[in-house]
Amino acid sequence: MRGFKEKTFKDRLSEAQTARQALLERFRSRPAEDDPDVLRRRREREEIARAREVREEERKIRKEAEAKLRAEQEAIEKAEREAREKREAIERVIREAADAAERKKQRDAKYAARKARQAGGKR
Image (cartoon, helix red, strand yellow):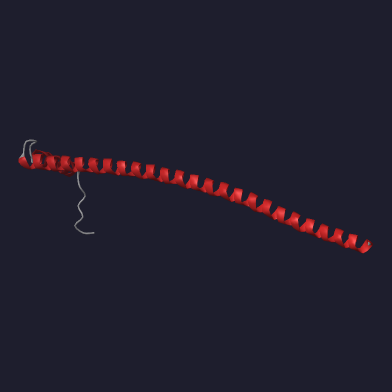
């Protein structure tokens, strides 16, 4: 590696000083707080922040309304489901009672027929 020159302590100090000077110049070249461009950018950022807050508030209100609507729909569906289950239970009881009455009627008819056969056979 020809041409490689190791930096001395003095070189490192001067580079650090140069870097500090450049940083100081960059800081000094910043526009003042009352500069029109700075004020315009600040107003734009504030408007954006206000618009964001309004959107967030609207989103929050919309979510609350959706949650309320969902809760109402779930309550309606639950009431309908319970009513349907009660109606089905009542219909089942009625159907079972009708089936039991039909079975009793058939059984009674069968017994009556047997009694009639027995009575007719003894004569």
